[in-house]
Amino acid sequence: MGRSFVSRPTRSIETSQASFRMRSRLESLAPDGDLRAYVMSHYLMLYAVVETTVYLVSIRHHQQVSFDLAKHWSD
Image (cartoon, rainbow, N blue to C red; front, side):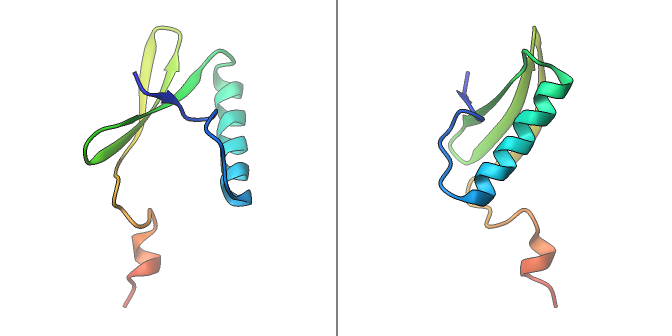
């Protein structure tokens, strides 16, 4: 299920760099592993598949503006 996350086209240098770092980390842990994304109605689930094991990496609400909320909404 889900699409390959690292094979998605990138549209910015920041995204390209982050994708490269993520691919490098996955390859160092499991050369045959795959990072995949599954989009549900309100959430995006990111998971890694290594052989016959699935590792949950992240679940995010698709309308979430940022992962660094303190930076954007500090007092």
